[in-house]
Amino acid sequence: MGRDEMATTERMERIGGAALTGWRGTATRAIARPVSRHSRFSQRQIETAIGLALVAYAVYRLARPLVRAARDES
Image (cartoon, rainbow, N blue to C red; front, side, top):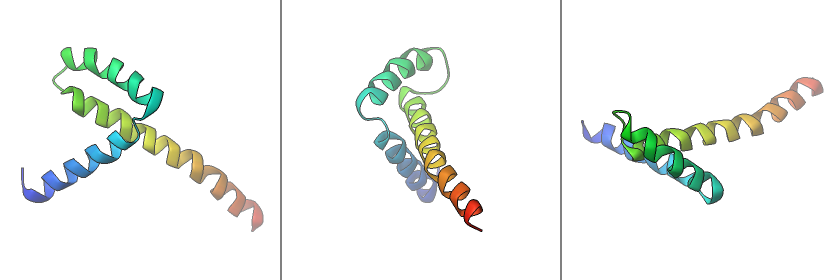
C-alpha cells in the first residue's frame, strides 16, 4: 500500500469514526464485533463502513430538500 493509499484509508477511517458517537457508536460496535468474527474484515473496517454509510445518509437527508427546493423555485 502506497503512502497516498494509506493517507486515504486513514482519512476514511476518521470520517467514518466521527459519525459513530452516542447511541450510533454503541450500536455499531455491538454489530461490528460479531460480524468481524465471522468475516474476513476487521472490526475497525466494519465500523468504518457503517460510519461512512451513516455520513452518506446524512448528506442525502440534507441535500434532498435543498435540491427539491431549488427545483420548485425555478
